[in-house]
Image (cartoon, rainbow, N blue to C red; front, side, top):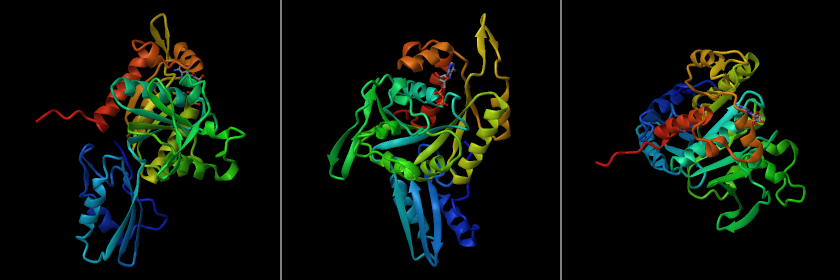
Length: 347
Ligand code: ADP
């Protein structure tokens, strides 16, 4: 796993910031066995006079990190007080983002098939379709009902996610209903999406997959900066243009400090008389993975059944687990599970 060690800050890293970062590196997340700086859990670090301000982005199972940070920071003799803002999605453990440099490369296809693969392994899964340019997750999940209910909770009004194949689904597209009371418009879109993530009554989830809008615009950066995303999966096709876009995305994620878990190369080849035939060139994903020191998590073949599954709302991992494409998604889901929810053997 690769990550930026530099906190998000437009100002140069000062000596005191370095001290704080070194101090925070002593705090290790026990499941991932890595320090919270490398994991991108600390952002917006600021030091004003002798006070430390930071944001901790954590899953629902990681909130003890708050107290641990407070404790290690007391070892800094000059620090009078530290203010830690906990950023979390209630009841959600691991939030992952699925991103791509441009549209049409199979980001949503990867999201739904990974979600099914994770759910089949026993995890509780939700999908947030944040792709404002093409919010098609509900259709890919076979959801005919597009009416979103709102409930009152002690913490205010919350959206009730839809459910398909045991997976909770919420889409920004559902907010665009013309007569919906919470409809959004125009330039404040990305702020509203970020708020939207918090305003969904997800219930207990092991994984929340966020299908990001493609590219590296304001909407993507805001969602990534403001959400407790544990890592990003980047979907690309083997073509050069798509790859150049992915490179830009990777730099953006690294700047924000969110770890990139790896690259999924989609439409890698076509099986022709049982022989893999590269349609869009070959080796692009692998070259990119080496260059950017990010693992290539899998190569998905072109398969008309993936496309049909999207159109009919029945993901391939659900209807044909044996297909090569499904097997790659299942393998990636297994790798995610091994990282984020390793089964601990009884003592
Ligand atoms: P994105 O979310 O990146 O815009 P989609 O997942 O919507 O892309 O995919 C674009 C189109 O390509 C969809 O019609 C989808 O069914 C199809 N598609 C995606 N991956 C494959 C694949 N490996 N084989 C065949 N069709 C695919």
